[in-house]
Image 1: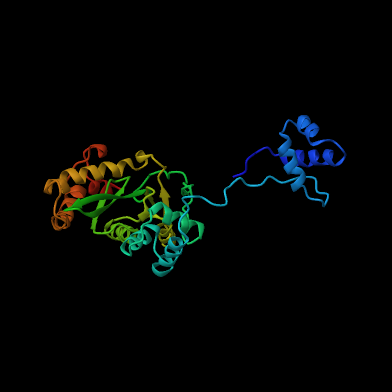
Image 2 (image 1 turned 135 degrees about the vertical axis):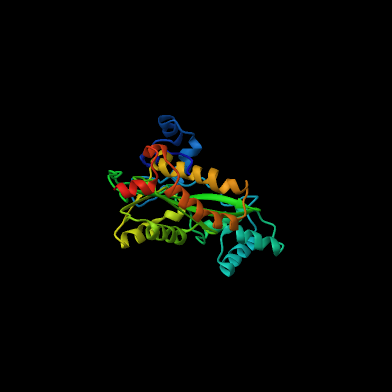
Length: 293
């Protein structure tokens, strides 16, 4: 780190040196510019003789440090990274198993200095959001989301899909939460739905990444992301998520067995779409709305 941030300092140093070369004493130049005589003396010694107009500012970074990492440890960090080709946490764990005492921050710092790990961008790249389509029929806007659950310390998921116009809903159990499962869920939902999906809306979850968007584009559908930190954009589906948890999932127990959920979902979806009256639909069911449409 440089000892001064004054952009005019390089030019001032050279001007002081030129005055000394013209015959001014070092003390007189020091008083004129307001610097110590020893400082002006060092400038005179460092000043180049090639006629340049500035003396550049040098870094004040120390050449050595009493607590610097042992070069042997650094070589072991680099060697272990090249052997396993894993992240800093794994490299730190493997070094610990080999008896190398070093902190995780030191491992990450040296991997960064040697460009062996890629640093994450400080700026999260949000997706472009086109205007919300006007909902005039089924399929104009279909929302998709993921419910995160756990059973005996293990995570499992329920992908939910809802048509905003008719409130027709679909849900699918999954042991994984990734783009492949999200794509499969939207395909199975459209296969069961009596209408065609046109716009699919989701939040910014990793399962709804650009690969999910590209797949929808390949089958002539548009993917719209909700606004960041605005769950009201998916309000219809968020309400369905609460309903299916209260009336189906948590009805089986606070931490129900996944097999019970898999068996209960088809029966509940049939009840929800065909028999359960919806207050927002004037006490009609989604099936009745679809029939009238």
